[in-house]
Image (tube, rainbow over the protein chains, first blue to last red):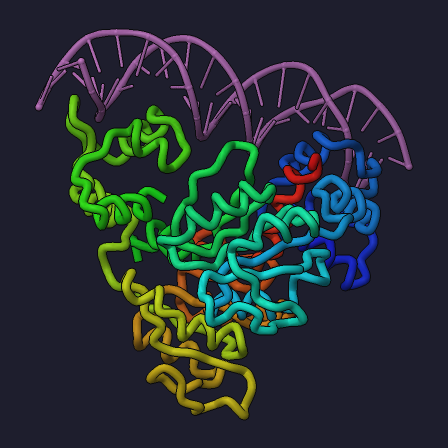
Length: 193
Length: 193
DNA sequence: TAATGTGAAAACCTTCACAGCT
DNA sequence: AGCTGTGAAGGTTTTCACATTA
């Protein structure tokens, strides 16, 4: 969130921001912001605030987004194709360098400069390309199996688009994107209306 | 998360589950599950566990997903069209009943049984259709404006697909779906590898 | 004067451990 | 025997408030 807003502020030409104004934008308290940042270092100047460019660079480093990350995608259906063609990843240093599908009729089909590979190739390609992130866009009932394949191949992070919570070892980081769950986590607060 | 897993369990034919087994599936402690549920009532039987169907029905009610929710979508570009045609919402009681775009050339274009309307119609249609949720799939720099329009029209929840955090009154619930942010929140833990 | 960084206090959340029910 | 529901304990997170610095 910090990175997202700081980028916007930088683009808008601002150079300095206080925890107070940043808090307004992020809808969190100024104290929270100062405490959050204090865990990683001292990035501000008393009396002035934070230099946006400097703080942004520091956060990029802390978050590990000052480097390129390679990802592969499993499940080249409608959703998978949309993700592969999504132009938002590469400007942020995320590159999808391989994709896989279980459907034999799709193998070797060209897409975005790659060709679709069979699941059997996951281990090879993950290792040889040093891929650390797997994107999973397969049907729910195939998700756990595919996640297990990816983890066995050496992937450390999973971006999961299926509406289930795959079970993984604690050193594997999973982020699930599920619009229905997002909706369902709103309605509780909307009931009153 | 509970609802998601309980549905799977129900589909698999199971009828009862303990906090222990549920914890394994969700990767949280049994005590956490019992405490979570205890805030809303007593749903289990000592010595047996939770009746899956009963707990699921209770949670659906608590979360407000035992009813239909109407939504509208603003921004009928590539992403917007994908969302409108996504078949996952309606089985869960979420129905997109109107859509809007700023682009005049798209007005009245038919899509999924609707026709694209101009932004000026937001207020009318949100009120007349009792729409409580707005889905926003417009470019980042138009998001805040569109969110303001939706809120002014009476929408109480926003599902935001733009990579920014719109500022809203505290009684408005926002959920942002941003794959890049999801990725960026993983890399911190992946740095070591 | 304006704003950070930070101990201390307050608030909140998770885990423990066990009485009590099936 | 097995498992829930729950006070109490233990941790963690957030907020407060102020010394300090530009």
